Length: 186
Image 1 (spheres, rainbow, N blue to C red):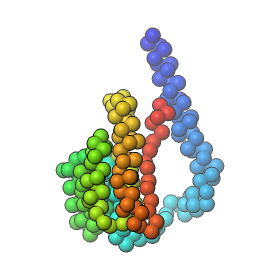
Image 2: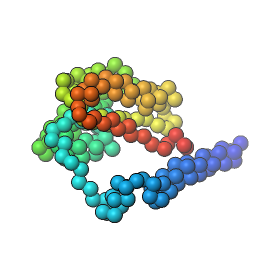
Image 3: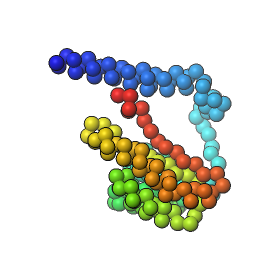
Image 4: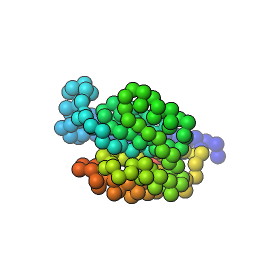
């Protein structure tokens, strides 16, 4: 039985490498990313996005990791950032760091497992038009149940997007970005 488990694990890992990473690399290297991708490769990755001029951006899962980096990047571009996450200590610390660098940032508690907390984020946005929503929060792995994974990775971003829809519609060209991974291929 032990050999069967290791064979299955090896198969799943190789499948993930080929389908996930392999497909991503093949697509990018083949130039199927379009003109913008090829231009970015030619310029060595140097690209200057337009200034946001104080537009509102909401980022979930923003108290650490990729979410915190997204917040810092958006703040440096001139966005007013709403940091949405579970940990008030880390959220307030990030907001303070961004404000200390001259950016506009605030923290609001948002728990992806509590679908009602989406309304707290919508209240934090207030009547302002929301230019950008980055649904970054997510869970994966064996430590969480399938139900929790679906609630956190699918239902919570949908509930938050719907709660922010009036604010998104008030902006001339709003964007919703859903961050994902290829971990489902493992």
